[in-house]
Image 1: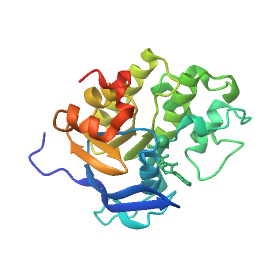
Image 2: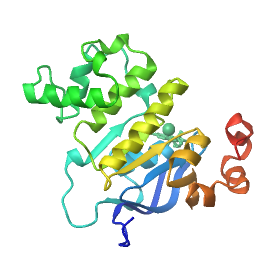
Image 3: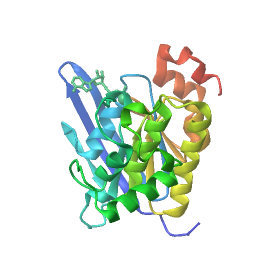
Length: 250
Ligand code: ADP
Ligand code: MG
């Protein structure tokens, strides 16, 4: 570990957003530093997806800002990878796996990939253990396979920030373990990158992340898993939704 203070890659300041009568987020502030694996946890409707969409520029906060790389450099699309919540994806979309991954290299959909794009996309698929799926139709994939393909798409440009929205949904347990392993290896290869992941699985937050944000409209806590994942904090943030199996690890 370097003795220098790690650089701030994501800096959220006083983010608030309201949808009609619903105050979805209120005064959220936190920083993510290079090399960090961050887990965002909180009950359904806590504002987790909204927070990531604001960071991505897909939604505009009513007040506050989320700065990415505040060291003066201009942001390129290739700096950011995004794995959206899969349930929002139309599985019948008529495309091949390789085409979806190539689309991560461009701003829009592409029906014919260049040789170089195909090479990069194949490399990204190999890295997530999905090289054998390249020629398959998206509609033929299992949930776990589709998740890997989206991960390859997010990683194909070797971004400095990867946002993932509940990436383990629909993935079997073994594949899920691979997924976190992959992300951890990515951070080893790219030590200045960050991974910000929404998860409903508290043990994932506890065992795989460096920093946890406990969110339910407001930020209940932010720190290392040991610091913030106390029974009191989780009960306060999850309320009655905390009676499920996911709290039992504590
Ligand atoms: P989470 O991802 O933690 O489950 P979301 O960020 O999806 O939560 O949603 C937070 C709250 O904001 C919820 O009450 C949700 O219904 C509401 N919400 C999110 N997006 C919209 C929208 N476009 N229009 C109206 N309400 C929304
Ligand atoms: Mg969500």
